[in-house]
Image (cartoon, rainbow, N blue to C red; front, side, top):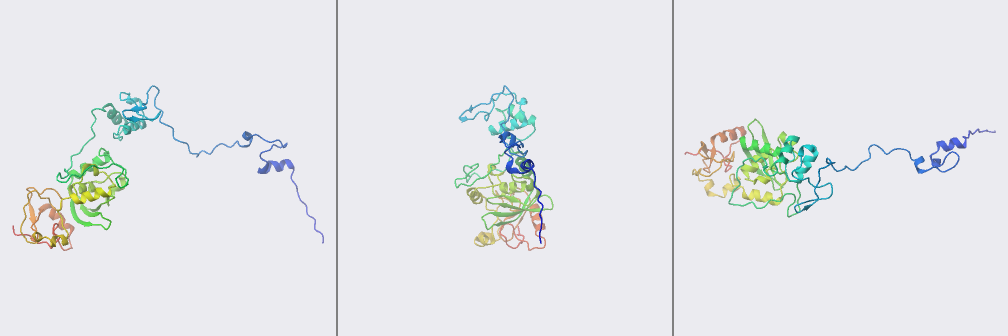
Length: 336
């Protein structure tokens, strides 16, 4: 049996046109130039290095300012520059170089730069840290142990807003306990119906919704705890990351207002039932000075709590056995 096969061969010219291996040659066999072969443009998504900001002509950028030396097109402009001629991005760049806040609209940025000598960042009064135990210098971005953090300036607008709320609103510490990793967990009840969990340690955290929108600074609940419970210096209030040495200092310097059941059992004065003096003492719920406000007194340890604060504290323990916020013993009212 014979089988005949019919093969259709394409012409050499058509083969050269369709095959990629001949793409470097023309149809008559002559080699093509590189520009003839590679005519496809670069892809649109090719990455390009961002150029320097192009400042207006006539505005000179300094290469030296005091002890600092800058490269070409990287330094500040003179302080008497007409700031209105610069874009918002340029104004912010100049503010950062001068270690000034770079938030706000263009008019605010221009005003800040026009008043360099008299500008003072907005400050909010907070509770003073105790003077008997100096905290010492605070490192900004790196600790002596090699720990790193992004340092948030006290002039940060988000931080200032949170500080104002923390200093104005009443908050109440319901529970306080030590964490296994060396931090402290605190249940904070605000003015509303909710209670939030605040953690102070190498990393601060809070369960409130505000923390979801604060990638850099702390919320009002953390600031309240840092200020009233731990009496932290102002520079640490906005920091989301705390160095190990700073955490240890905070816990060591904090006034002892609440005791664990074990600590109370080792101190005879915590179970003698004798009412203690209120002078210079702080409420164990709001952690503010007791002053002349009405108080209730524990029948076991004799320590005082603001009556209004104790009412909120009691409601949070509804359905549970009520304990004294100071000595953690079963609650009974002292006969004062």
